[in-house]
Amino acid sequence: MNNPFNYSTPMLKKTAHAIRVDLIKALAHAGSGHSGGPLGLADCVAAVYFYGASIDPHNPHHPDRDRIIFSAGHYSPVIYATLAHAGYVSINHFINDYRMFGGCLDGHPNFKTPGIETASGPLGQGTSQAAGMAAAAKLDKKEWRVWLFMSDGEQQEGQVQEAAMWMGFRKLDNVIAILDANNMQIDGHVSNVLGEKWIEDNYRNYGWYIITIDGNDMKQIMRAIDEAKEVRGKPTLIIARTVPGKGVKFMENDYHWHGKPPVGKEVTEALDDLGKEVN
Image: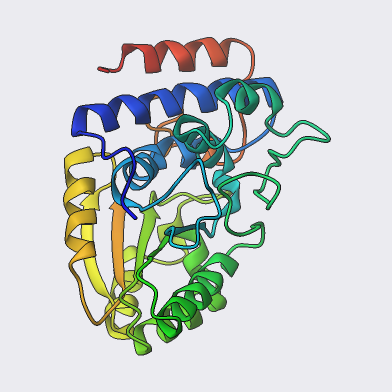
């Protein structure tokens, strides 16, 4: 399988921008959800779905598809917005039904939604799930990859470190992990608890190939994806330094926007800020 979109750099930028706009609309309609991280990670997620990964939105269970795992389920606004733009669900469905009672677009993803590979909520479990999937693919001699999105805050979980250590030992080169290094968690800065240098050193010692990029620079993201696909004999970690709240000035680099949506005039201001971005 190949990526069915294979978007150019300008198309990826436009798609990431549209994803940001739609996730703000969905958060505002729901009145709850996470803003900062999803806005910051939109470029990387768009690049994986519309450039890097082998997927088939018309056949979400295709046996040869790449598996895309979000270990941090609170990124659901950017996950669902991307799935909508890729054709797994409709954009109107996402904006109007996100976090609505009785719907399939819960605050943390579950299997009711097409394109979702794992249910998520407790931080760190996605890394272990990715390890199991990647090992299964190797045992079955399959060519598909596992794309694993992780947050920097969840690196504080022992489960993440154990799974990363095991993947490195098993030389699972069918794993490409994207670490959202936005230095933000719910009550402050990640660096006050666990510094990025420590994270990078650990993964290198576990036997991972490391690529560090500006996670809001689409050309750097695309080059990192291309480079990661060529790595053999070890899993790859792309450390993507992103700006939480990217595109919305009053949210950028403010950890208070980790876990809340815009309300009232904030919605208009957020959409105005995004409207000023170059498409």
